[in-house]
Length: 83
Image (tube, one colour):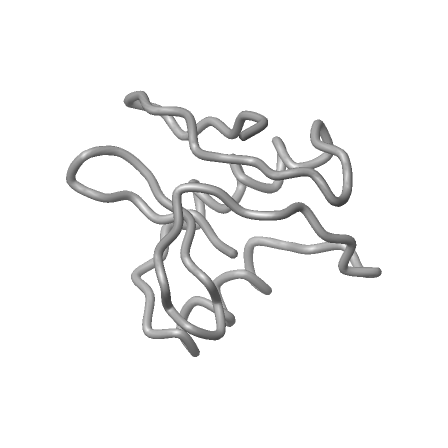
């Protein structure tokens, strides 16, 4: 999943389906993700992207354990929290 800005805040979007979610499962990808990798996946899913938002997302992901649910905290700035 990748983060997107909405009118009311932020959501997570499935990179394959394009479906929008308030929360998602942290998984191990076996490779280091970069904003450019996420940008490519977003384009394939037809999702508008923000590299700055991807950077914020990737900087927060190491704070969460694999197999745990995370959600987007409501607020003006993008922030993940345990769901």
